[in-house]
Structure formats: C-alpha cells, structure tokens
Amino acid sequence: MRYEEYTIEGRNAVLEAFRAGKTIDKLFVQNGAKDGPIQSILREAKKGDTIINFVEKERLDQMSQSGKHQGVIAQAAAYEYAEVEDILAAAEAKGEAPFLLILDGIEDPHNLGAIIRTANQAGAHGIIIPKRRAVGLTAVVARTSAGAINYTPVAKVTNIVRTMEDLKKRGIWFVCADMDGDVMYRVNMTGPIGLVIGNEGSGVSRLVKEACDFTASIPMKGDVDSLNASVAAGILAYEIVRQRSAVKS
Image (cartoon, rainbow, N blue to C red; front, side, top):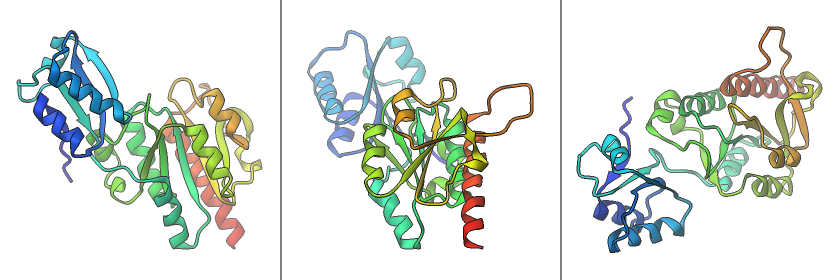
C-alpha cells in the first residue's frame, strides 16, 4: 500500500486548509514574513494546537516539493485522529476491558509505526499521543505500521496527565515502563489498563510517571541497559496479553 506525504504549500492553500478544518500538525513560516496573509495563517494556527516553526528560507526551499512555497509550508496528518471516546467505545463494542497505549513523547516515526502495528496485533483498543513534542501520523508512520493504522485508532491530546486522570475516574489503571520498576511478571495488568511508554532517550516524563499506578520493568540479561521504545512496548503489551489469557483460562 502506498501512502502520499500530506504537505501543503503556498499561502492560499495553507489558509484554506486551516479554514476547512484539516488537521495541521506543524507549520513552517519563513523568518521575517509579517504581511497580512501570513498573519492570517498564524491566527488560524494558534486557534488549534499546531506547532509553529519559524525557519530560514533555505529550509523551506529544501522542504518544498513545488518550489512555490511563498514562505509557508504546512504538514498535515496523513490520517485523521480519533477521539479518546472512540477508543473506549471500541473496547465496549468488543465486550472487553479497555487496553490502551499512552506514548509520552515518541519522536521517531518508525517507532510510532511499529508500536501501532504491535498494538493492533496485541488487541489494544487504541493509542494516545500528545499534541506537542511528539511525532504525529505521518506517511512514514503509516508505512511502518504495515496497514495497522487503518484499524487501530490514535487519539491526540493536549495534556497526557489530565487525560490519564480522566480515564482513572472511568476505572482504568496505568502501568509505566521503567527500568527501576517491579519486574513485569509481578505487576497485575489483567484489568482495564493503560500501558505508558516514554521517549526514546529520556523515558517517561516525571509528571506522567507520577500519574501512573504501577511501574514495570523488563528483565534484561545483556550488557546494555535499555531497549528500543517500540521493542519495549511490544514486550510489555504481550505480557498484558499473557496475563489476560491466563485469567480467562
């Protein structure tokens, strides 16, 4: 399956994309551009959660596919995002306890794509990502997911901690992947669960970790002290699958 990059160039095209309600992840604006059309675009971008980057013209020239960017390029999601309610509804429709993945700042599109693929195979009902400081649903993510992006909903939220607190009120517990946590076999992950995976370099942020109910570590016997984020997500997701299967049998 082939996925096209969703890049919008030119002042009129970008402004119309915002006004049409398209999901724009990032906006790149040429440094020093302050005329009326640019100001209109910036106002529209600030109404939502679009990340705005001011860059030199040379950067825009490198990014441009048409050669006619007019000082502005927008990057839109290759796929539409779901709502958190959609994820909960998917669990309810299957008669299953919710199983979510919360990704705290995953920046590598290949990691996100691989996690979406694993989540789909492990039976997770959906994934939650933050709107800022994280990769969105780009074409690279779609390709890496091997089609799973079409079946596993991904919700994008402004505040991960606030979302977790809201979900706790609905009976969901959160387990955080952490090297200093309890060995995963000793952590009960059989009920409504949210698995939290952190950034590739810094791991789970302090506030998100504090919002979790448990921490779980993966037993490691080798000479390096960490795993790739998508690999860690896969191991812990399938520990959840194993525990849930054991309860049913």
